[in-house]
Amino acid sequence: MIDRSVPRRVLPAPEPRRAATVPAALPVRPRTGRLLVLATVFICAACGLVYELELLALGTYLIGDSVTQASVVLSVMVFAMGVGSLLAKRFRHRPAFGFGAIEAGLALLGGLSAIALYASFAWLGESRPALVAFSFAIGVLIGAEIPLLMVLIQRIRRQDAGGAVADLFAADYVGALVGGLAFPFLLLPMLGQLTGAMVTGTVNVIVGGGLVLWLFRRDLSRRCRWLLIGANVTVLAVLASATVLADDFERTARHAVYGGEVRVAVQTGVQELVLTGPRTGSPRSLDLYLDGRLRVSGYDEYRYHEALVHPAMTGPHTRVLVLGGGDGLAAREVLRYRDVSSVTVVELDPGVVRLARTDPMLSALNARVYEDPRLAVVTQDAFRWLRGPASGDRFDVIVSDLPDPGITPSTKLYSQEFYGLAARALRPGGRIAVHAGPLATRPRAYWTVDSTLRAAGLRTAPYSAGGRLTGFAAGPDRTPHGVTQTPPQDWGFVLAARDREPPLRVDRDTPALRSLSTRSLQDAARDAERTRMPGLPPSTLPHPRYS
Image (cartoon, rainbow, N blue to C red; front, side, top):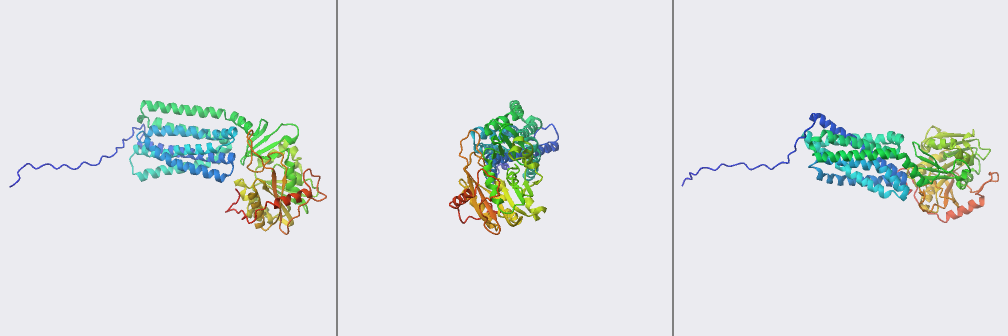
């Protein structure tokens, strides 16, 4: 039988429903709007990297060990950026409002991060938890930026995802380059860490908020628009108030850290210099801090400098080289010998030299050595100077009055390569005296210095000077004012020579000393040998061994 029924109409299967991307209603042409979004990416990326570098710099300054702080900040921040990218999904239906809210929060947190870290250190004595918390929070907000910007730029003009991602990341990376260069060369020297972070936050909130409230204003409901306006105005008001009060805050925080007699506080291109104590009176009341570390205490610095300098002066000492020691105190001890014809001080920071020349109390403590015609100053990195044109000079004595090997930026000055350069600068029979950090509290670092000197072809005589009367430290063992912490009880030194093990003694023609004698040196050498840690590998540039 033939089926004569009316044939059914076959309808095509419905296509899967696509998530529609509604074009944004912009006050400008799409091409201009797209360029404005990419410019915003550029500026926000620069701000984000400034926050990151500011956390790294301040974390290193307050906590020490730049390698550890860099690892903590970078790893936490990168992890948090991944978390932020996932959390951005919650705002994908309101990308303009989400991006505006994120930028307001990022500007507030980033702008106040430096002042919060410093406050934590000054009044709580510990800034590591704050460092981790701010690294995580800022990383979350930075990580949420790109997904939302991807949605916004696609709403302006639909393009393939690969092209949009390439454009966004190109703007992001170039902005990061600009921010990375602006931080050390512009913001830090001109504004300092605290004000620099707050100015960056101000730029961040103006650019991020301006993009949303003007370019994408038609995408915002009335309620969202007023919420963003209120948030941005509040952030600007907070940052402006904090900027105005920054100087008062710094003074108050410094008093909390250093005590109430801060006379000089200056940020050089190398470090922060703080000088405390009365303007008149005995220099014994003076304290000099470099990057928060108590470097000189007028009360007992003579114990350190006598032990560092005078054992090395036994023997010929016509020409002397002092590496570091811009405070002039090691040079003071050297110039007490009338037969010294020249002293060369190689100091990285000209600000230390300037302070040692001009401050009445510090110049009194160093016996105004910079007025002595026998003394010459070179403001340069000691490693570079030893490798440079002056590498042909030869000296009878080299005094290495450098920061503790436990400070990461100083490790190259305690390397086998550095001591090889120093040994090359010695005359036959010359000696080198090295400050090697406290022996009692950091014996591994101390004996690594000894091992490194031996690896450079030098014969060594280890010793120490005990009886510290204050927390005077050439290392990362500063103690915030009001925080109880046991300071190191000694200073460790190593005397070295190329030809033979140098004798530990003071000659009869040595100027009168207050804390040192041949017997005390020999006793200190015997005590040091009891703590020897044999078999330690030397520290080199590619493999630093200090911790």
